[in-house]
Length: 345
Image (cartoon, rainbow, N blue to C red):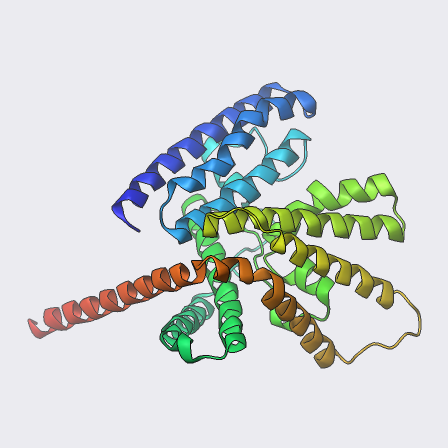
């Protein structure tokens, strides 16, 4: 991270802390409902602009997810008296829970196994480094093979970034990690992929913010379930348009919204089919392959083009290569230092 972005990080952290202090102060004095929501408006308006303080793509995109998505939705839940935030929490805990995928520690549960283990993290980091090293041959790759690498890159990077951020907060503040991913490559269907296995911080806020209110308004029948699912996918698409803006700094194209709306419609159709008694079901391996094929094919069509068209993938590759080179050089320097120290003994 460049010196300018380090200064931006300090400024953004200070701004977030001040904003969350105000939100906590307002929540302590106002009951849930419109008065509390109105008091939160300044914070809700400021948070999406803070990631733009970063010049580098990765900190801008990562902070965009934490601040403009997680924090915004958690504050909306707090405005209605729901969600994980509690105004009685100490300020550091309030800030951490608002902005990171963590929660208050439950003393009745053992959190030792939550998050990525060191071996799994090391393997994922090595795989990500290997993928980054392959990008030097991208000009000779089949376009679809390159998109497969991009898909793996997105998965591994998200898994590592979210888990590492949450683990750091847990180490400092003793909080439990919220689940991040649950082996999405084993998904049996689209509902399983998006709702139970992929980036679980997102459905954790979309369900209470979007799905349940829509379902309650439409009704508890099949129509209500379908409406809740479609609404959640649509909102996810809109939020991804914002995430893509942080990545590309270009106006939304609507393709991310189309991608998630399409996947939502397919998930609803899939659920309708599954509810039919006696209708055929594919074997689990076939269902998993079909699910991944659907996600990747629609992603190739609608998800990646706004990023590649803007050339943001080249920026991602350049920044990733810089990180890999830094880690490699640091490792070489550390090994040489240890060797020199041992030779003096």
